[in-house]
Length: 93
Image (cartoon, rainbow, N blue to C red; front, top):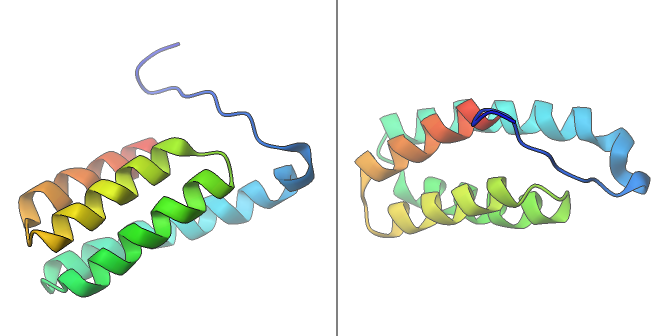
């Protein structure tokens, strides 16, 4: 497995929801970029918080981990760290 590949085991009862999950996450990347460009740290905090919850709910711990970092960066009004997180998130998806 390369650095760009991740194995995630998804519960069978939610497997059919994964395409919608990823479509929503990809839209979320654009929302994050827009919020960062507007320096809307409250929206970034909320988005990061939501990412934390939804990632683990669907078995994607990496989404939750990045969400926590976005939330923390927003609390600290640290646009550089949030930008790194958004890029990592886009690459992960």
